[in-house]
Image (cartoon, rainbow, N blue to C red):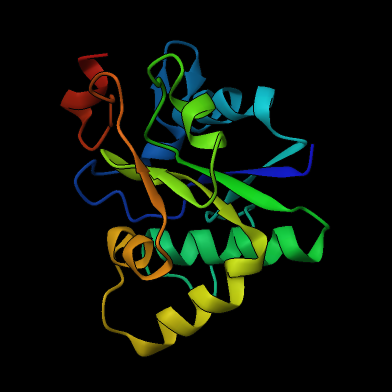
Length: 168
């Protein structure tokens, strides 16, 4: 397996009010749930962002694309062919969604575009895209690279507020 798993955990968590990556769902932090989701599909799983994570590229504060750029850089430097990314705030995914994303690259979940499969070779393209400073949305970048959108078979739980977490 030459897939690197990357849990994006470098956001500000402004709507949550504290670091949501470490917020507990059951007896484990959200970031641990996201990591466990990726483990069966990846040779290694890393956290991107946060104090001990792989750094965002080219700098923190660029949103999810900075995290994806950091993961692509790490993957290329460590011999991984591609990166499977997930947000730390996605503790549960519908059955079969990751398998559908893994069938093609680059591809992403059209309902939650931080969930995606990105060839490591796209790292330079993403850095160039970020340097333009225009559209820093994941959807904007997916259009720029012609990534394939994959529909989720059901709504995806996404934790943005304490109420979202309590509802799980």
